[in-house]
Image 1 (cartoon, rainbow, N blue to C red):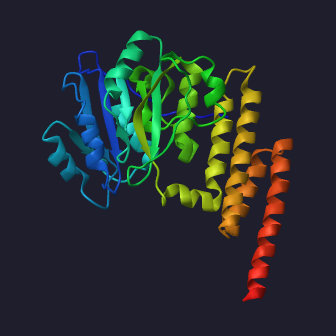
Image 2: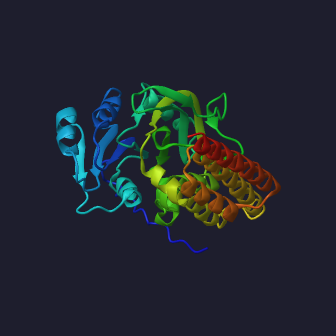
Length: 332
């Protein structure tokens, strides 16, 4: 598969080069933006060490610039796209506008915890060959309540061994937890628009295929879950899984030849099982249209033995649900 990744231009040698560039893409809904900005400012090492900029994708609602002026007091830069370009292109604009040696793309509703920047700086300065680094993180809900922790990838900080074999199969990193060296993006390109809603996962895989990746086991970031979001629309149509399948196909082109087929097979099987599990939840909620969409996309991913067994169990569950519904109908 031939993919042209967006080119990321190098920065002039004589330009402003802080250690960090914290780039915050925004679009509409500024409910959490103030909280996000404060989580960065509370550990701001100063202008010479950190660039902080909000890049708005031509929002039609709310006023992110006003919040930046209020909270930043001149410390945070603000720029706006001339027209709506979509989230992936806005991420790439973040990279292009970043002056720092290390880039942190922090979404408008996520958070960093105290010590995030100082601790990750220690890790990457110790491991000079790393192309990216990430920490353990918390999933929080719309009310800041902790929901779960990300998996513990290693008990000790440093370069992860066999990381490509993990990230190539399952998405294991969320944006607030990861920082990427600008030169990494310059070498491998920006986020791939053809990966659609999973362009982030495709990027983390591409980085792991070309560079060592560092890990910090301390919990230092928060990723926010939303009850109603774009992901709900994607699930309804099955596009969440079709996007994953397409990203797996993209990744197979740059995985090591001796591992590409096996890792791609495992990834397709994993997300087929994930889709069938989602379908089960949808059937329980009487959402047959979305359940069928998930089943259809699951079978486009894999027909492995595990997937077939899971499908048979799902059919059995679906029949039971129909019987229960019929009984309730007769009762009334």
